[in-house]
Length: 163
Image (cartoon, rainbow, N blue to C red; front, top):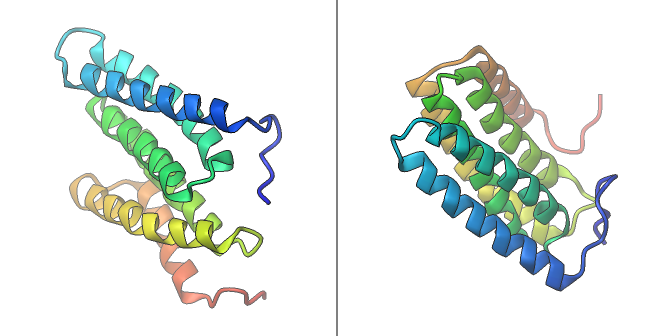
């Protein structure tokens, strides 16, 4: 059984469905603002994507379909990263890519998680890693280099081995 992070309450299935629906609407609105060229539209997109990430955090902890929850979490971070890039906040964008990847790595490697969640995390890691590699190729970043180094080191250490 998953236990929510401190500060989150167990939500009913109906409430979680509302969170997912609201997340989808928020992402759609954020995407619309992201595509606009009007002054303030990127700031509005950023705000909407930040709201979506808060909802995705709840879904990641409590939504029963791990693939849906992890997709929402990854999309939220990646949309934030794209928006931050357009605002010339490269390091902040890199941070969002790293945070998403690292959280999925922790879920994949957490043996207290149900196997279905661990496998879902592994599937979504391919997307986060591809995005990290694309970002590194196009933009570079010291923060991103740190994240990638930690990822490569984690791959070299056998899971479950403690030193």
